[in-house]
Amino acid sequence: MATSEPAMARDSEKTARFWPLFLLALCVTLPMVLFDAVDGVNFLGDIDDDLRAVQIRLLVEGGSWFDRTIPMIQMPEAYISPWSRLVDLPYAVFAWVLSPVLGTETALQAAFSFVPMIMLVGFCAILVKTLLAMFDGIVPVERVGLIASLMLMWLALWEFSPGRIDHHNVQLLLIMLSFWGLSLWTPRGAVLAGIGCVGSVAVGLELLPVISVVLGGVSLCWMLDRPGSRAFAFALGLTMLVATPLFGLLLIGPSELVSTQCDALSAPFAIALAGYGGIIAALAGMPVRAGWIGRGALLVLAGAALAGWLGWQYPLCLQGPYHMIDPLSRTFWLERVEQEKSFLLYFQNGNSATLVVLGTLAVVLAVSAPMVLATLRKGRSALAIIYACAVVALVLTLLQTRYVRFPIALATLFVPYVLSMVSHKRQATSKLLAGAVALVAATGLALQALVPARSEQFDVVDYLAYPHCEQADVSVLERVEPGRIMAPPWLGLQLMDQLPPGMTVASVSFHRAAPGMRRTLQGFASTDGATRRAALGDFDYIALCRLPVPDSVGADTLFAVVARGGDWPGLRRLSGADDTFMLFAIDHGALR
Image (spheres, rainbow, N blue to C red):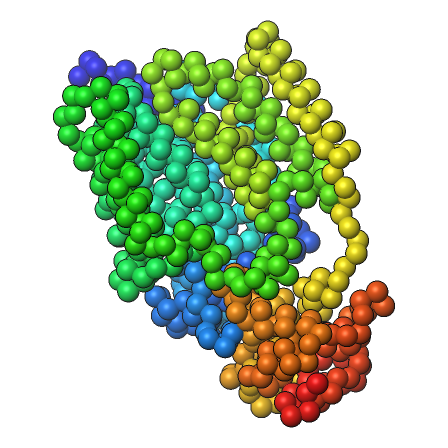
């Protein structure tokens, strides 16, 4: 009893500290996300929100839980979404509850507005819990430090803005849950970390590198026999061994769980996660008396066997999640997508705000490094794993800007420590801070001078990808016979909620729609008549929006001519001569 009283006293103190900080976090973050929603346009909003809304609407209106087919897209094969039902679930439940009172459409719009903010409340709670556990016995988590951390986290917090229904907010919730579990460094914490890791992979593969650092860090700690690592690794392994098939069966069903989908949770990733769980649980549960070299050998042999078997059994996935993208779509679509480019894009676009945030994160991590090493020497391991995850997330962002929200959420966890050290006027910290700021600033200024500005020369493919008639009248679709429409990917996505029964579009701007994008590029942008006719062969209509394509783009493609309002042999205009939205019937015999 005597030994439990101090622990109970510490838990009581943490609870007393949690509530004021949690309420403060809400007071800071809720106005931030509401400010983002004031004009009705999310700063981070993109086409992912639009397609997610379609997927959720289909589910709420009676779609099958395990069937993620989007029937309005025919490429010519049907489009099957890789996106997880775990993200759809809270929106669908919210809408199902309110539909009898508000009607389906109003209930869905309410879900899209309120569910992200409900998740924000959960994120703030887990964030505060994580900070208190991370810095327990190191520095107190003060109000100023928390506010500074949240203010610097603005770009990640805007993932919780009303209407932002893409999966990134769920990913942030799950990775923070993993960090909370790591910070506790107890079997109970290992359960939280395991659920967070498996859930993150179930939602999407973007955070696989960070999850790999978590699992690799725990394995390394077991190998080195760090304090508490055996119990933590054992509980983590058992959790993943149980949670992986459970998530799979509940979210994608038995048939998908044994299938091979290299861009989503399926057999290769389920086996990898469960296999890791089984290996680390078995090793941590055995009374291994070998030294760290012997334990390392066991770990490497088991891991290599699992990785080798996965590579042999699923060779297609060695090509990455985008193996289905053909060379044409890769060149003229994927390689032009901004989130696939490095952080040098921010210099080209003049995005100074994001560059300042990334530079600040680099400084924070540099100043925190000595503290992380000191805690390692004192036997604490979790902080080092979290720190490594933040570093990896920042490096990933430098390579591909799609990751930008993650280091902003992870590296800012160390802001309270840096401010505490600076406020106490620690000379070593001040010197390190000054040096880090100078180095980062010099690097930024050098890159600013070296990186060329973005080219303003656009070709026909650039205009083909440009959304420019979101509010156009598309009622002409109601007056024609059902059929297949060839439209630019952005327009195809816009039309999906307005298509009459029997109408389909060819493509949207997502990697699984690459077969449709290839045909769209060939039909609209090819200068070869045979290629164009073959691409349009299965389609009944062409849809475009009027666009003042400049004279610098030649008149040798169907898109350039028709987008300017011109006519093309084999196309019969169905919309008004001056309408912004233009619909044409295809006469394949006369098509040039």
